[in-house]
Image 1 (cartoon, one colour):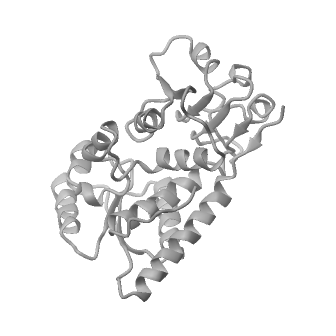
Image 2: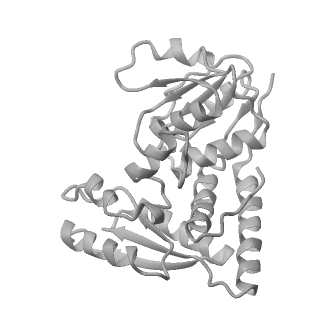
Length: 287
């Protein structure tokens, strides 16, 4: 068996093309283009790269981006004040807070200050709660992107055992809710899980989102499984790799995402989709 690679880069490109067409059509009808406010605090090099990529994607599809670069020394009160201003700005449909924040800022408090209707990252407790109650509104971008990829390949969910490695608020927990909503039986593994291999071996759908290279051994992969690697790690030689032993895992899985070029491009594409939804376009975009 040789796994088929799920080409997130090309799938995301097609989705961006559909989004661009929707925005163009709306603008021709007299609507304003959607607006996305991006907030970047501090000088973390990786965060600057991520924000640059997001702004480029906005420009490509016709979303207007408002860029707020703030010093790492900014106070929590100052940052929350800016967010409140964006919450009431009618030209801003979505507010994106680039994480991580400097350690003196309370991430939870600041996310809570974002209007849930403009929370295009899908991190606000209101939006996560909606997902938990099977009434999704704005959904966390990375898990949403994973579901788009799975739907694209025709993944079956009902009767399947999905195992998620990693339980963060950003990826692991909303990922479990997405798969549960789709009808899968879900197991979440985390740093306190004993005998990780035992659970991974049972996975019909395996999602790893830890950020530790080589964490998931190829021999643990169930033959014929669908394997989604969200982890991204930069090695000493500068190359990027995921959590899973990719080359060896390809000989056991039926489907697998590469790193890079798998889930990453979908995260940005779903951010754009969420921005359209927040703007009231309510797009129906095919997987």
